[in-house]
Length: 96
Image 1: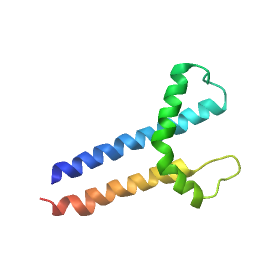
Image 2: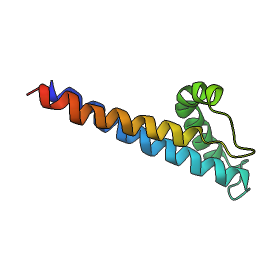
Image 3: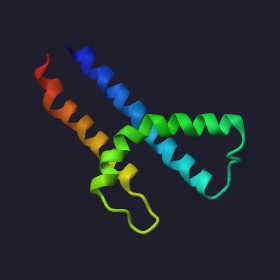
Image 4: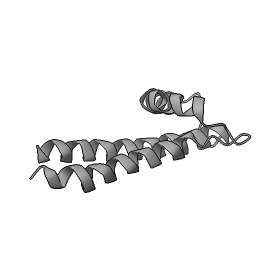
């Protein structure tokens, strides 16, 4: 059972970095640092969007945007961190 918790923690950590990559990519795309017509850039952008949008969409409905700043990735990162801490502190010690 402890192995399952470890796999969940690794998956959450991987998703944490994917959300960060998606936010950075969206900034690069918004400021025209990357070429959106490049096939590789488009593929990476679509992948990051499709992976993160299902988790970010409900947050965007609840959390208002601050002008042009979207804080939903920050909220999602905090939720992921909270889930990791709950698993480590309250679930893992009782699995032994």
